[in-house]
Image (cartoon, rainbow, N blue to C red; front, side):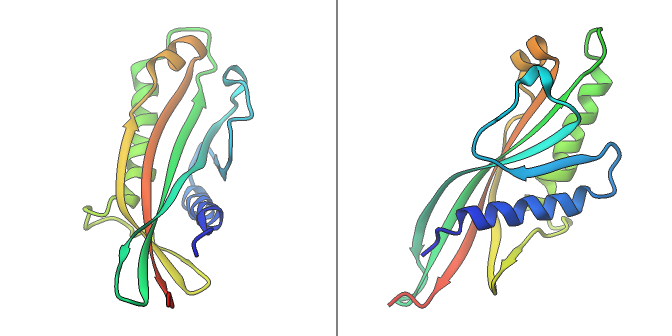
Length: 162
């Protein structure tokens, strides 16, 4: 039974950490339960993965079923200067989310570097991805923090259900 929601979240965080390893500026990625920082104190670029739900999707056969795992992936970064946030700074962050998070998860993008998670011989593949928040205007205006949110659903074929 898939109480794998935490394990899959950790594997997703590891996959993104490896993907971000050579990026400048560096990016920290982790699975979290809640935002534990004050937005005014965000330092550097962070990607946080929040488990949202898991649910049996449908039977595949009499002995197998599909399970879906939904996550929210939030990207945060604070603008540190004491001036208005420039458009180019915001454009760079929006591009980062699209190229480094959304595109690798997009099941319709045939040119993507496929992000399939393999954990203890089980495979989890993205079946749905949506950028629910390109950037949160109020958080940017009030805290000078870029906040973008992508939701993804991973599916697993669970074998041996009898």
